[in-house]
Length: 365
Image (cartoon, rainbow, N blue to C red; front, side):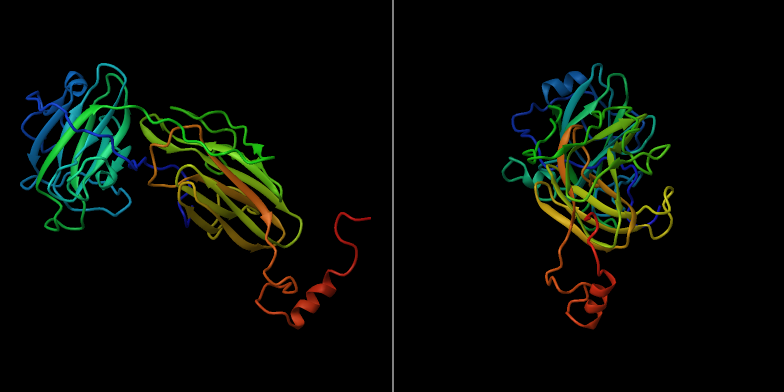
């Protein structure tokens, strides 16, 4: 596919950080800085996590083994690693609050080595006072029993030397898995009807061109959908639930595709006349909407088939399945009703457009 990437994604960082004040400083297996490579030689035990684990180290002399784009680009900063292999399913909060440089924090498992959570600056909005700005945290990260995970302590910045390495403090404590967020349901909204997503979920409901075979929900002009979305794990890869709605336009239309979600939201209008896979140029316009904000794409379209896409933004992972959104497809009236060809002025072309449309209105007798 071209243009905006609308398939699966790697899950990224969280927008808040739990308080880590009062955690005990332990001298467990990992005490004394992380390992240069993700090989499990420096490990944090589940018992240490339950008690509250804190360690300090310094990345200055480390190599640059791995990296992940957390929404601010890749970097060439040095990194160190801690391993966690929980005995039981557990959620953890991992923080670098109080570190002395611009940090980056991500996690991956021993099977895929693909980061599934990542964060750069969550400590900036956390409850700790006096913590270093631009420090990282991951909150409510769910880990499966018996799986080895690696915590990567990295830095943000294009090249080594731009305040992206140095002394760090890492804290790992038991966390609480995030709960689905909610919106006030719209009056008269149509429920999306998709089953709740979850680990190893296969979207054969309305995954659009991301499903095999492609499958869509339908939407009509003037209809509002009350939907749900989330991120989940499928065989070690973090995916997002992408919802595709198919609309048939009987005539040329100024279309509005908009909505709101309790998470960072992505909307796209796609030319569906050629079906799946999408050809070059099929993605017509995209829009990113902040959590709890409302916005819309407005686009003049010819009669035909279109796919209206709604999903969690890439870079906003960790959104529990069942988190809510609403979307509406509607006709947008021009700001000047007499401007029938939408060129910003009333002139002879509008008269020609009126003459072309002369006669009974569609749907009338």
